[in-house]
Length: 344
Image 1 (cartoon, rainbow, N blue to C red):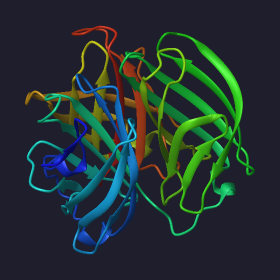
Image 2: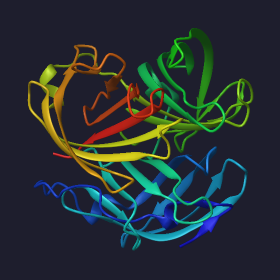
Image 3: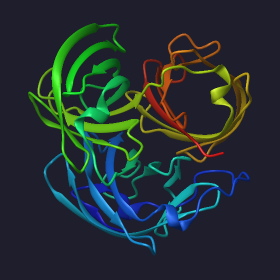
Image 4: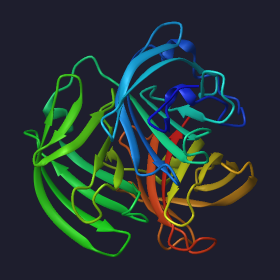
């Protein structure tokens, strides 16, 4: 188990993420390529993020060097495995677990550190690189969801970004505090799919091979300096039907603020009317059965019946959903980010 500067990263991961529902849509052939990793931690090890490119070979072996928010390099050498139902495991650890989406371009994992700052919880999002990328492929409407850990937590942000073919961005934001704002900026996109944002030197984002999901990490320079932030964005389709939520989804959540450290993984079977039944496990080892009803509007907004704060969005390929929420009980005020991927 390799831990650099107190952070147990990909080399410390492993384990299963789901219940093993039937599917058979995934194989080892889905793994090879270059994957961009973006990770964030909550709890005693925060503020912390890590990011960078990893190369996965045909045998699942992983090589590469990630960079932490402190600037420290973190060499990686482990092995990835994917089951026929999309569960992703790493090395031999029994703690971390993840899942791959049906597009085979997004993997999401949760983990608990066992060293340095034991008990710290983490969320990792991996996006597979496309062979080529162009700025014009960003054009469209995106919904972005951010979670902060460290001194600025608890905090989340929801943003709608309209991106032009030249990378120009017009953004409106709403924060968990109730604050709202608007600004304009400009993206640049490298041929490898790496995003930079004018005026934000600490920002680095990546675009998935399907061109409908982006992920970034950043460190706040103002407000509560040193705060770590992870953003997950989904590009919106022209229209959605309520039944687009139907299928088997795996939901991975991370909390920040008073309820941290905490993560949860849930495998949910969702019907065409949005009703679902799920089995969830959390970082403490607890198991919970969940039921409810998700709503999906014609513009891709995701809601949960009876939840006044939870709000999210679905990507244009309809295999990824992202939302933020604020806890009203247990540890009220805790902020939560959930990334859900469709596996069947």
